[in-house]
Structure formats: C-alpha cells, structure tokens
Amino acid sequence: MSIYLDVIWALNLLFDSLLLYLTAIFLKRRIRIWRLIAGGFIGSLIILFSFTPLHTYSNHPISKLLFSVVMVLVVFGYKRFSFFIKALMTLYVTTFLIGGALIGAHFFVQFDAEMSTKVMIANVTGFGDPISWLFVLLGFPIAWHFSKRNIESMEMTKIQFDQLVDVTLIINGESLTVKGLVDSGNQLYDPLTKLPVMFVSIKNMMEGMSEPIQKIAMDPDALIFGTVELPVEWQNRLRIVPCRVVGQENQLIVAVKPESILFETKGERYLCEKGLVSFTMQQLSSDDAFQCIVHPKMLTGPKQHDDSVKVS
Image (cartoon, rainbow, N blue to C red; front, side, top):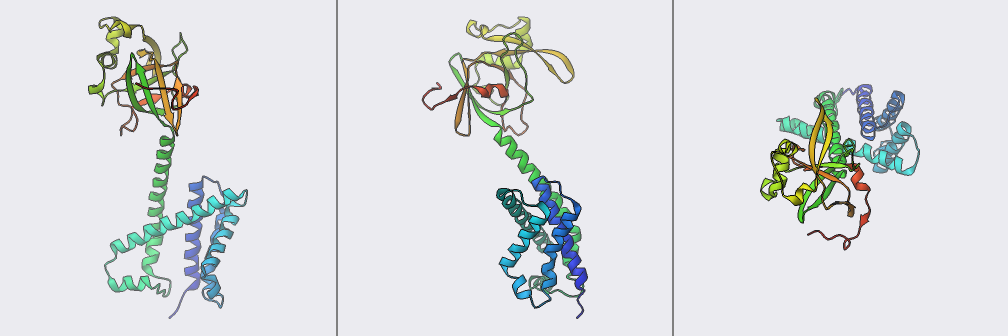
C-alpha cells in the first residue's frame, strides 16, 4: 500500500491554517499570513511525527496540548496570560465547532455502513480517505461560513441583551413596566426644558393602557391641533417636542412628563426624575424583544436601594 505522506500533510497544513484564521476572525485580530502558515505548519508536524519512532509521544494528549500552545504563541504572540488563554480556548472551540459540523454532515449523507466503519477506524490509504478530502474541501468552507454567521449572530444578541433594561413608568399614579433598549443614537431632547425623550410602543399592550395614553399613541396630531382633549391632570404633563426623522425635515411629537422613570439592569436600579416619554403605535422591535427606546442620558441618574423606591 502506497501512502502519499506529502499530500496528507498538505491537507492537514491547510486545515490547521484555516482553523487558526477562523480563530483570528472570532477574536477580531488582524494576523499576518506568514504567522497563520507557520502556526498551521507546527500543527501539521503531528502527522509527520506519526510515521516516525516519536509517534508514541506525539500522539499523547499532553503533546497535542503543547502543539496547540506553540501554535497560539506563533500566530497571536504573548501579551498577557488572559489574552493567551482566550486565544487557546477559542482555537479549541473553533476546532470542535468545525469538526462537529463535518462529522455530522458526513454521517448525515453516509449510507455505506462498511465505508463508515473504515472511516471510524481511521483507515488512511493512498492520498487519504476521499470522503475526508471531499468534506474538507467542500464541507469546511460551508461549515466555516455558517459557524462565522452563527457567532456573529450570537454576538449581536449578546450586545443587545447587555443593552436591555427593565423600565417602570409612573404617570398619574399609573404604573407601566416594559423592556427597553438603550440606544446611543437616540439623542432627542425637548429644546425648551432640555429633558431627554424616550419612546414607548403600546401596540401589543392596548388592553392594559388607560384612555389618555391610547389617545396620545393613536392620534398625536389631534392633540397637537386641539381637536382632542385629555383630562386636566394629563394636560399639565403634555409637551410638544420637534424632532427630525428620515424622510421628513421637521415633525412634532407628543410627549408626557411622568412622575418618575425607574430603570433596572444587572441588579442595579436607577431613578430618572427628569425625562419625557412619547407613546407610539409603531412596533419598535420586530421580535418584540423590547417595547421602548431609552435615551442613554436617562441612565445617568442616582442608583437606588431596594427600599428607596416603591413602585405602586
């Protein structure tokens, strides 16, 4: 039986280099090509050692760990211990992620039980198992693409989750609790009072809303032009705020000054006593992950203890 060791080694060199490149993408690090190739070369040495008297030592788990350590040091360097550990763990997660995807795809389309058995016992012949070549050359880019997309999606979800806060509004003795997204792009202020403005959608909460809030959200123009009136206690809280939106130079919105706005995030509570709320029927989140857009200025208020604010 002839074994083309150089071809099998080249396959592993390519595979290890691509894994290191994907690891760099996950870590958002810019790496030189020669570093990636050098790291892949070090990882591929295990294949060469497997055909020497050193195979007993090179195939040991500790030896493989040492190879991984050297690969990370060559590609990413050493800045501090936490940076090194993060890069090493990301390399292993990337390897398991891609390897699991390839193995799963392999057995999903594999119908030949005898061939599957041969693959399981790692029977390498000639240029290597043709099924392995097929899935490395075709399956790796596919698994790489979807893995990268999934990681980016999880990152966006985490970023959004970190920016979500619980918001409790108290207006004329009424309490409303919603999930809010802190948006740095929201820089709307009332030009007269300099109070920040937040937006609250009541599209999916109409049944629990009081009549004044429903009127403000459903027909703000009627309030601006005076064709609809609110109770006296609400009129004293109304503000007309000019704003700019895409496609319109100037627009007027109706905002309300609540008695208090309480934010809770990561176990801490912040009280905002000076702020405005604009109610709308527009759905702010396509998946209803949040119901309001919070002005970042509102979170600069003082922290509150559990017994310092009572929400009725």
